[in-house]
Image 1 (tube, rainbow, N blue to C red):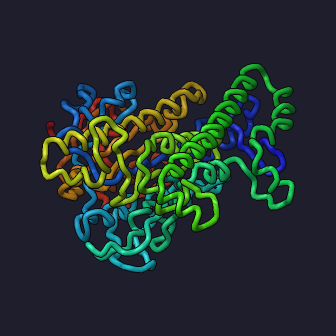
Image 2 (cartoon, rainbow, N blue to C red):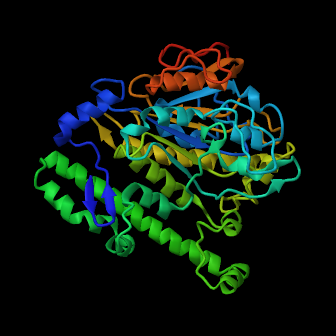
Image 3 (cartoon, helix red, strand yellow):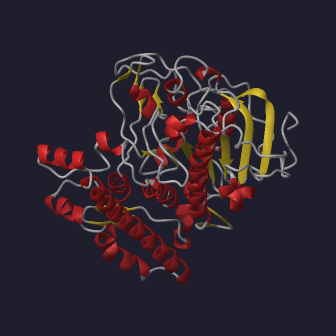
Length: 463
């Protein structure tokens, strides 16, 4: 750790940490290797089904129009076709798909706060197994606060639509949607002294600078460079958080309704924390998303956590995508395309934007060296949605991509086509076993998903 008043920054692995690194690696159940990290990126509202599936199988596949932003990462991907979540093939169109995405179970219908998922989510199974080895057992992030109230169209509390992580069958984990607060969880201590409170307005880099300089004098040249790169990365994210908050606040102040709300409340509006405004902002929220993805990467890089989830939006979100060329309106309303050609094109463009954000995160992870490889090599990044076609609310043949090499346990660069209605939970069992959390069965799984490690495997069904 680098320490200062009100700040405590975990360090990336350095050559000087030889004995510590070996101990940490042995705790990952993969002796002599770096720990494997798990990231889950969840997208609501499904995809344009006509523009998602690649052509060809195995390594001889062509990226689809939606997946095209991932072209530079084609050899880092497993595109998995014909997986489904049978337990979500009931109830309403959205909340069952979201709340049960990582549990493989059917949520209990309720209009109150007595939520019940039916199981612990896959990510939390891992967190409960390895979370004691890191400062944060897991990190849950998003860009929207939970929606409150009841969706009277389907009779479900909207709280279900804001959670994919469950530490118990009745305990959803709240996600942090404010980049500043997420940053503080990673890099600021919980000290409650007056000096620590006064330090809240200072850069964490300034707070730990003296400790960093002491450490620099003890390091070799390679470690000094790595430490400088790390500090620069943290400071860059910190500055961008400050800038984005100012920009968003300025956008809000231009809105007459927002100005009146500020006058009525007599306080400054927090554009990240105000539920009434954050889901309706018309501006480009790309930077908000990328800040959260950067924080996930920093959390993995420093081994502050090995498990993290991110939600691009809540179920039935009103998030507007009109900042994209050729798009008018939000993801949810566009997903109800009714096979209209113009809406399908807009739907595709929104999906393609999501892939570009995934590519951004993978770029960041590949740029961080770990041993003979990089951070992405020692990770599994799952991107998925709880439905395929938002117009049909269909949980069959879900859009699923798995990136990374899982510490050498995955052989990516392939499109794998499985038998129709292969349980999504078969993938979860396969991932859990590679994350040092041995499990024979998870929810409706029937075994591991075959072929993830075999470079010659193309699937169980011809394309």
